[in-house]
Structure formats: structure tokens, C-alpha cells
Length: 112
Image (cartoon, rainbow, N blue to C red; front, side, top):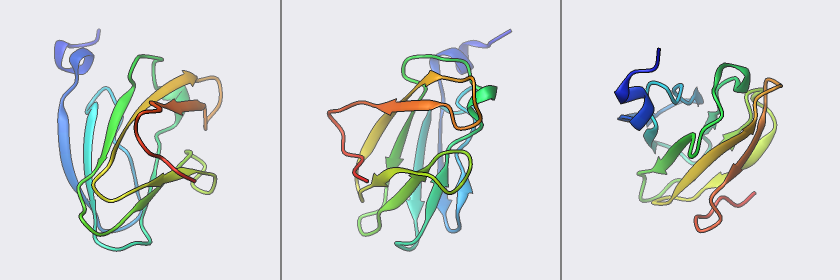
């Protein structure tokens, strides 16, 4: 059973001081990451473990200086780069594979 906090979401702030995997959206729908260097990457969770929902989660880059890459769960395929100080709403469209099919709200910037 999904709890109210999981349905409506909760938030987490974390340092992106190495390449890491995003938290499962049932735990945290709002994820605020602060990279400490420009070469950091955030890998999305295995899409097969996530229910399709709108939005699946929001990623925020709290750094004033550093961008970070957002990658599929395979850890190598780049979705795009989240600019310093920007945010993006991520939506899971298809969860039949490990990488899944993701898209993001167009009013935010996620340039590859």
C-alpha cells in the first residue's frame, strides 16, 4: 500500500559529491542535489521498479556554479545536463525496460 507521503511526495537535499543514483520517487518526489564539481552525474533509478505517475519526480540543481548530467539507469546513456540553479520535472512514460522512457516538462531546461 502506498502511504500519503509517498503519493504526495516528500523532499530530500543531498550533496552530489560523487556520481550517484537518484532516490526512488516513492521515497522522495522532490530531490535537491548540490554538485561539488562540474563532472558529476545523477543516474535515474531502474524504471521497472517505478510506477508511472505524473510527475514522477522533480530534480533541482542547488549549485550556483556547477551543472550535472542526468543519465538513464544504465549509467552511460545521457538524457541531458541540468544547469546550475535549474530544476526539471521528470515523467516516466514507459517502465517496461531498465532505462524506461522518460520525458521532462518543456518549460524547464535539460539540454543535452
